[in-house]
Image (tube, rainbow, N blue to C red):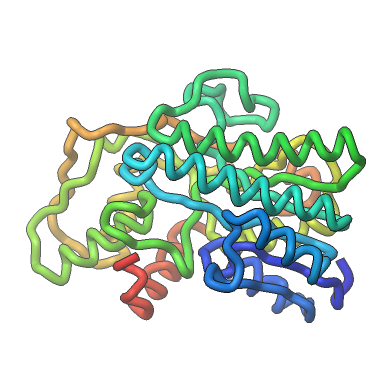
Length: 313
């Protein structure tokens, strides 16, 4: 990408999209295009096609998506499948029609098979059953990255896909029911501390293993890959490090300052038992993360305190 290339970031108000915009601006890119939902509804094909016809962006970061934790995914299966499938197909197709030079599609590590060999390599996609609690989201995301691959093979486009691990950081969603595990823990322990609660109950038994990546590191990797990577196979983006949910809860509680007891509701689902990405491909390309988990959680908690309205989303 040139510094004055026309770059469209879809989903610029979300956690990932806003981080990509920050990274692009910090690197001196001057022609960044964004649209709010009220200005451009990505679920409406006619609106998306008109936007691409008028703007003709050179590069597209497709970070827009309907996302959520276990409760949100399992209780709104149809919504997660429809909205993600529609918006990604509309954007990818319009980018192809308008001769976009390159598009980067954001997948997710949760679309790999539930019991994939660990750490998960890029080629394990579609080799086993999906996690039932987020199957609808996974099917939509798989369709998006496969559509990018098929356009490359049939029409010679340069559309790539990135598979990030669990993300957290500025502009996260801290909703009490719809958030992912790390922001949910930040909110729960903060509210417990403020209320003087003696204990906090977390879901499951704390045994699942998870990997977490600070969102600004993902953004840096996305810009790096947009400038350097060409290929049909997706690229994993993570840290290569994991910890149990129990260890995560204890770390978040310590950073937030909650000193009570952590209890576990074993009647609740654990979700996928382990999700660790094999990041050897990204390492070989020359990129490595920079934010350690403890430092990142401190930054995320600071963002939570400074932006209280995000907890209501």
